[in-house]
Image (cartoon, rainbow, N blue to C red; front, side, top):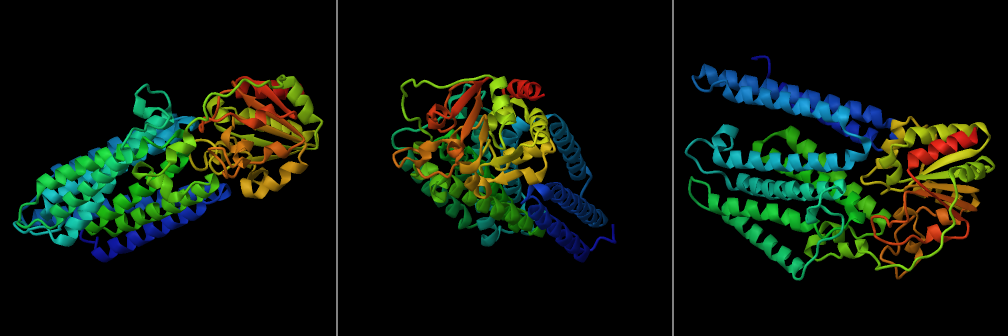
Length: 490
């Protein structure tokens, strides 16, 4: 391994970093997403192979000096095989509807990895070339380890809670979509944060060769608790933003540990993830008319729960319902149709049937477009990925700001499992979602809404769109309803 020089390692890390940047650029558009993924996988492969080669070089040098054994390398190989196997299995088996909670789970592992590395670095700094044996950790490295540890711990526990909320199938109260609030919650979070920072500073400025384990361990434990308390008061309506926010946290945790280990690849990759996640969170907050800091600091005094709390019991109102055949007849005789996909479409895995329906309508001369809200589904880009899986042409898919002006001239809008993102209540200043930008489906000449029931969406609000005179409800599983529409169009 003598051919592996530090200059070559730096160059390979630089190439990997360029690949990561190109990956982010490609993932900014569905049309370029596959290319972006290819760049990301290439960059990660280069970084991983380079890191393994560097480990082999360092171990060879240690062996020549009469130190080291093969145990560490064996554990690295075992981790690669086990982790890679799990990743390959999940990639093949996880359904599209489970992707949001999978992303949250992955974020939690990144945070936990950051904490584990920090603990190892504090325990054996000489093994990471941070300090020589018998010497104290430099103050600068202690600061980096302190920041990386508490951000990683918050990311881990917060992501676990987000996973439970997104999964929506666990009876544990903290894993349910409704906000968990209690008296003095914000003050408790603030006190815990101050204590955590104080203990971190005690660890940083403690003298002596031996690290100050007591404040470090207590600080880490408080950070784990704080991660839970920050996320539980945030309701289901804000979960897409939370996922993006935790993605950002995981990046900053990795970057902090990268500084401690003097690993430029970790610093660059972590910074890219952290900054892109923060930007995406800001964009999504604008799309939901939420304050960016309100969501991020929801556990410290923000009113994130207010937007997700239900508006109380609603009096029963009559709705007009119809069959799949009725809906197919209306769409087949229209000139323009806009389809608004939502989480209900993903749950039913009806995207392939929907594409078939659109093809038949297009064959009859109907102009069909898809309208995507920035926070439709349960994660950023959820609906875009769903439609891409069915190979829906990209030129038929439009973002909210590009298509909202067309609803007023559209003959029929077909809403499939969407709720809050088409709720006209957002136009009411007294509504909990007042000011939230929505897809203005209510302006269309005719509206067809497919849902299993009249249950409210994530925000827990009744949807006035369902009761409009020009709205027809078609109840049932989205896949079954769409398949019946396909048959009726024929």
